[in-house]
Image (cartoon, rainbow, N blue to C red):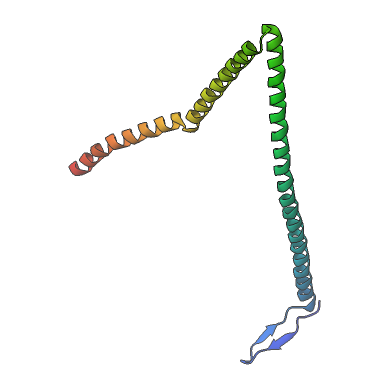
Length: 150
């Protein structure tokens, strides 16, 4: 087994120099890590660019879907209006019936929206939190009286 070279320092102490193979391996490891993280950084920047492009296309697709949905809704309303006009044999009564149907639908949507807003206020959590605070407030004077007596 080859001995490590002896290196003498200024104060005369001898130190063992690391073998050159270990230094070469550490240098190679450093280069490999740099390449690995460099490749990961390139991949990350490419994916971020793709995500930015996808966001623009996603917004455009959402706009197109909204326009198509509104168009479909208007077409279906017109179809229901025509069917009601044939059934009632009067455009006036058909439009009145259609207005009533839309009003009922709108009121149901408003009530559902209000219920969802109530759920978002976390009523059970607020009730539990209030009970916990009242209990803590009631316990505090008893604790202080107990410490004063001791």
